[in-house]
Amino acid sequence: MNNSNREPLVLILMGTFNGERFIREQLDSIAAQTHKNWKLVVSDDGSTDQTVEILNSWITEIGGNRVELRCGPEKGFVHNFLSMVCDPRLSADYYAFCDQDDVWFEDKLARAIEILKTAGNAQETLYCGRTIYTDENLKIIGPSPLNRRTPRFENALVQSLAGGNTMIFNQLTKSLLEATGIVAHTSHDWWLYQLVSGVSGRVIYDSEPKLFYRQHTGALIGGKSGLKAIVTRLRQLFLNYYRGYHAQNLPSLIMARQYLKHRNNEKLESFSSLRNDKLLNRLLVGVRIGLYRQCFLETLIFYCALAIKKV
Image 1 (tube, rainbow, N blue to C red):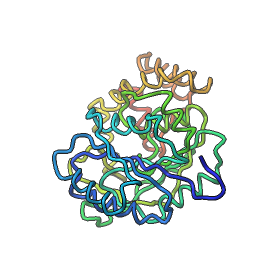
Image 2 (spheres, rainbow, N blue to C red):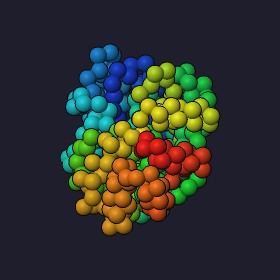
Image 3 (tube, rainbow, N blue to C red):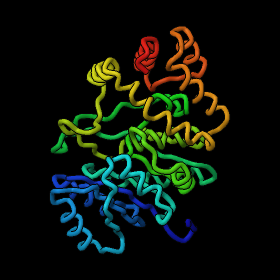
Image 4 (cartoon, rainbow, N blue to C red):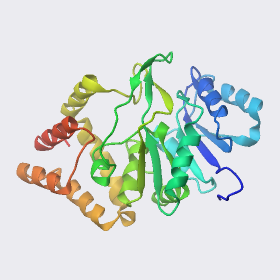
């Protein structure tokens, strides 16, 4: 769709559910973007509060030709986001996932698009990055952890790189998501990272945060860093969260294996098998595959978890 005479069109994909408290701030931050050539698709997943009314009021203010409001599938947030990105009727140059309660910096789209344009469109390309954690009143807590290691499939198998609220991707990536369809994955952002790295596409991680990411008490998914993050992950480890994640995610990847590079298919097969192998084999195969998380301590914890069959 892109040509040299206009800004690339960005299609923003927002999933909503009972978001009346903060959605207006997010919508206004979208309207304030310095990159002006955008459209918004909102999939509301059965809100029972004033979310839809707030959306309709805002749409009236800015003009309805830029926004599509649709009813979501009501099967959870992952299904909601994938129902949009897998819709072949939606077409643009780039696509951006959007949560209902963040606040975007005004140059969020502009920065990502410039980076993506520089990368070109010859392969599946995914842009993602850091965020600024805040409390519910936008009081700054601090930045999300800086991921320093190269994004690769060996990392994607065991860790999500960044939040979906930072992700922007090109048409080839959307076509890949359409081809693989709506899957029963734990998270749409982790799925996207696994797919793009699995086909040996390009994953670009931006160290400069471009949005405020609200942290809620009892949030579905939130950010933690430092010692609290380690304690939380250790607790999740012993409660079999991680083993459950992989048990849910691996079938989706296996169904998509026809799209993965041969070497990544081999790593996927080895990882899937090692989870139920003997202790020594689990560790040796994990090292041979090259599995890693983004920081040394978490990688160490991962291999300890692998040793006690918690992965």
